[in-house]
Image (tube, rainbow, N blue to C red; front, side):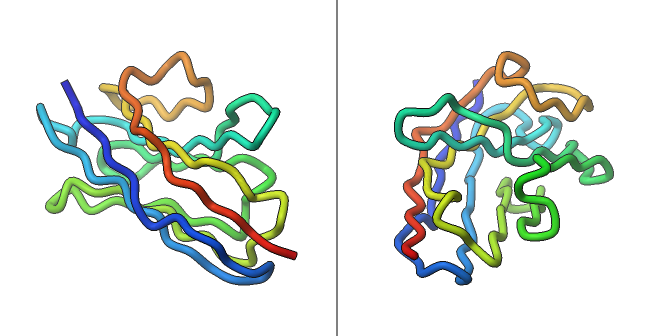
Length: 124
């Protein structure tokens, strides 16, 4: 089992920045691919970014490329999502997810473990 706890959400003005953290605990979380997803009100949950266990493979949704950066510190069992140039359409609950293995996937069904989410609100 892997437990995931997100933090770092909040209210920010458009153009601002936030850094989300996802603290992982449990069995060998450093061997898991980690992902970030988000769900806006009335919309389906969508992929944001993912990073392989060693950090060598990374993928982003087109909507966040060039603005968001995913990274991880395996010594701290923590994954980060640096979000810059935030837009009102980035407003959502952001979820951290984990899956064993090397594959970097955008599909929710590939991920076995999920956090409770952290709210990000971007005002215009």
